[in-house]
Length: 135
Image (cartoon, rainbow, N blue to C red):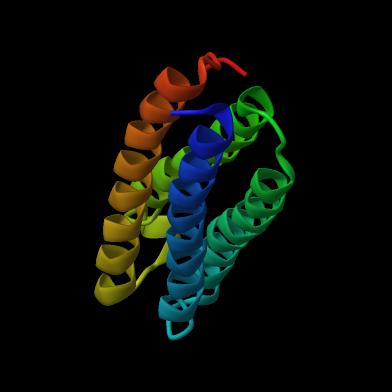
């Protein structure tokens, strides 16, 4: 497979991943609306960062011209989104935030998805592009 085909294949796959991450961030914000104000601020922050990083990553991926820049853009975005996934998992159940059970469980599931999705595609992208995970 040529370099152009390889870049196109990776771009398509990673664009789908970041689009899914973007949708999960939006769902997180919507689900937190009926909750306590502390819960709203927590998930507005986590969801907002996830949305912003997804959009910026999608732009950087579309502008990438070579495998190295594509890999670096993808890995940097996935690290941040995976970190936000960990934030969803550990922050939601804290009594301070007074989250509703439905908000808590939904965002816990979103966090697990972000963490697993991010971890899988971090490793896969690193292997395909040769860019180290410590970008």
